[in-house]
Amino acid sequence: MSEAALLFAAAFVSMGFDVESASPPARLYALIALTALAMGLRNATVRQLAVPDMTTTVLTLTLSGLAADSSLAGGSNPRIGRRLGSVLAMFAGAVIGAVLLRWGLAAPLLVSGVLSAAAASATLLFNRP
Image (cartoon, rainbow, N blue to C red; front, side, top):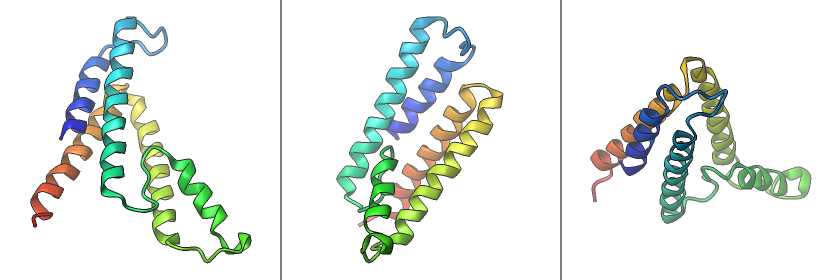
């Protein structure tokens, strides 16, 4: 829920922000700080979960794993489905985010916050010991 809160705060800060001139600069720095904290929390969470090949912001690691472990490189393609799914999910997210930018910077941040809150809520509801 902390990541969602940071993304909602970033969306609020981005309302009325002029991307072309990057002004006012204080808003730009606030956006950078809020989204950086959100990404850091996500990375720390994924690292704590220790799920192999499910990197979040380091797509390059997944892509290099796909290439290095491929049958073309003499590998056995371990967890290829998970790796490809991770790459496709990130690509789809990038496309959706780019489309949402048509409605301003706040739109993709709000959608990200909603999805993050939904994922956290689902984890709390369905992942009870």
